[in-house]
Image 1 (tube, rainbow, N blue to C red):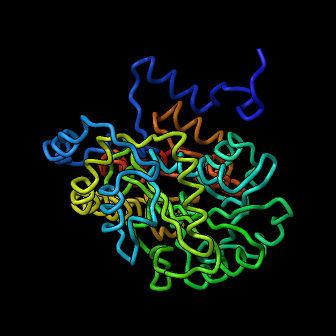
Image 2: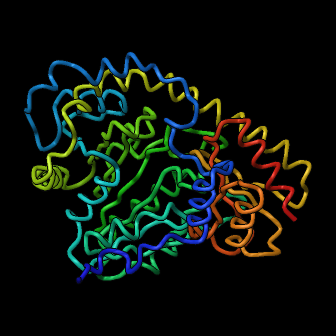
Length: 385
C-alpha cells in the first residue's frame, strides 16, 4: 500500500519510548520527569464548576459559525484584553489545528515556514501534513537565549511565507524582548511574510526581565500580518476541552480573516460544549494558573538546592514556561544517558536532542511534576556516574 510522504517513513518508537513501554508493561516504577499533562499533575480542579460549565442547555442545539460562537469569542477577547475584539478571533479545537489552518492559508505545496530551534518537535510534521517545509532557525545563547535575526535572513528564501515564534519558547523558556519583537516585525514586513506567535505559555513568567514582550497583542498595529495563538490547554489547564484560538492583527486583517473563515467553515471543529463553557472556564483560569505558578517556583527552588550539591551539573535560566534545561558532564551522549537513567533508575527525562538543543550535555525536565517526584527523580539522576 502507498502512504503519503507527508507522513513519517517509519512509525517505530525510539529506544527511549521502547524502554518506557517495557518498564510499564513489567509493572516497574517510573518517575516521569517529562510530565506535561496538567490533569495528571495533582492540581486541585474545581470539578463541579467545570462539569456545570460543560453541561449548559445550549449545547443541545447545533448552531455553528465558522469563526466560532460570538459568545465564546467575546470570552476570549475579554480574557486577553489589550484591545482585542471578538471580530479579531477565529476559534479552533487546538493550537495544532490553528497551525494547520494557517499553513493552509499562507502556503502552497513546497513553500516554507521558518520555525524556532530549539523547540518542541511538532512543526516539522504539522508543516509536512500541509505540504510545506519547516526550516528550523537556531536561537543563540549568550547569558540568555536570543532570537537570531541574521539566521532568519540566511534561512529566508523565495518560497518562505511565514515565521513562527513561541513566546516563551518551549523548552528554552525564552521570552522575546521588545527589541527582538520590533526587529522581527520589520524583518517580516520588509519581506512580505506573515508572523505566527504561539503564546500558550505566556501567562507563566519565572525569571524574565522587564524588557520581555508579555504578548504580541501588546502591539496594536504591527507592520506585518500577525497571528497570535493560544488556548484552554495551557491557559485554563484543560487540554481535554479542546478549544484554541487565533487572533489576527496587522495589514490585510479583513482579507486574512475572510479566508480563515472559509477554511474554518470546511471543518467546524470546536465543540458546542467547549464554546458554551468558555466564559466560565476562563473565569476559573486565574486560580488554576496560581497553582501551577506556585509549583513551578517551588520546583525551581528545590532543583537549585539539589544542584548546589552537584557542582558538575547546572541549569539554564528559565524566563517562563513549564520546562527547565539542565547541563550535565557529557561523558556519554545525552541519548545514552537518558536510556541508562530510565533502565537503571526508573527516571524518564528528555535528552536535549529531542528538542534540537545543539551539542551534548543537556537534559530537559518538566517543572509541572509534583515536587516530591521531581526531587526524588533528580536525586537519582545526579547519582548516575
